[in-house]
Image (cartoon, rainbow, N blue to C red; front, side):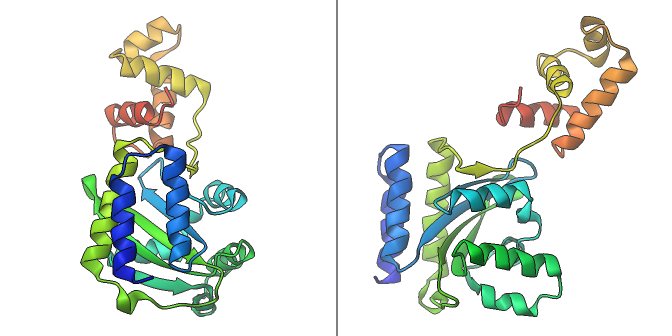
Length: 236
């Protein structure tokens, strides 16, 4: 298929009204039309990074469970260049880091050996990206891809996923204790730490301790930001 036509089809899928199930199936079918096996939309967040993908479920679980997004060289290159690029597991040979070499070997076991990634800048300085992946050892289609067309199509895809609240197929789990969640909920309700201490029959020091740990778990700079993130992620 002509790459320009492929991106037009991606745009069409992103703007058509269809169920979430059909939407995800259409993305998988479209990836295969271009000769790839799978797709992965990744929304990179300070906390709460998530994916919409048809990668094997076991790989997605492993990826987020082991926080591979922190070492994934494809993610790192997407962040640093913000341009369309191709990649392959063959490039793992040049990496000195054994963690990255192991990452490529793990992906290879699931038939993820090469692909094309298109990153875009989204709101508040964050990054989202679409990858189409293949079991082939290497490929190169970037010479045929117009970067503006690619970025525009992926931006529309991102908007559709955001606006339609498409459910992630996998996401990075935030670990908070029940006590942290409870106290954050009180904070979200507008209660001060001293008021929370009275309500929960705790000392101010303990309330501050738990809320500070909750803030760190959410990678938030302030308590209001932590409550906002926790609410958005449906943790409270």
